[in-house]
Image 1 (cartoon, helix red, strand yellow):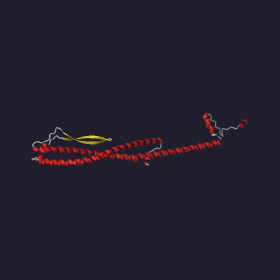
Image 2 (cartoon, helix red, strand yellow):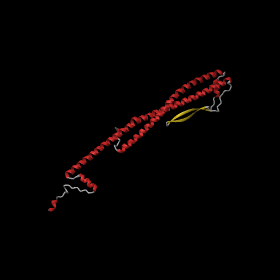
Image 3 (cartoon, one colour):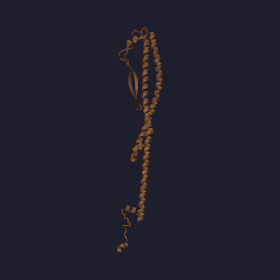
Image 4 (cartoon, one colour):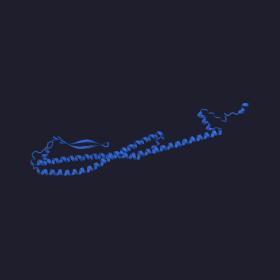
Length: 248
């Protein structure tokens, strides 16, 4: 009711509300298509997360096993040797980018590696090959963890966007568009009522004029014909003359 109090029932207002309704309907259709595209990508991410996490767990299991095998293959303390091999310059880094899906910017993460980095294999004897294999497995495991993190970040961001878009779709479908339709119907009913009242008033005035003309002895059809020809002569009881008056 509060929205109706701010509406002036005019034809211009009806046209304005119809334009708003058309824009809202088009926007609703576009948002529905966007939600469908996002939901399709969202379901695909759900499947990918499940598959990639299982694969990551298998790779972690193999990586920890490779560390145990390397420890048995090396006679010296491997932890001390690994600490000596650590450099201040990182050999692996994260590459961040953005992917555009249906107008939504989603984060993408990739693992980068310094190709010039040298692996520490000195003074390891026959365990160098085993340690290199363990290092390769951990590098692959790290890359898999970054991949899972990237998918998880996209999943969370996409879930939030879908929630917001669904709210906008529901607001248009159940609040804005019905309110516009209700206001348009209300104004059209008011205009129709005013038109009926105007027609009734015109009919009353016409009947009153016809009655007055009938009482005055005026033929309205002849008057209308004279108006068309440009000659209008209306005799009333006040200006009607008696031919016998000229005799006196």
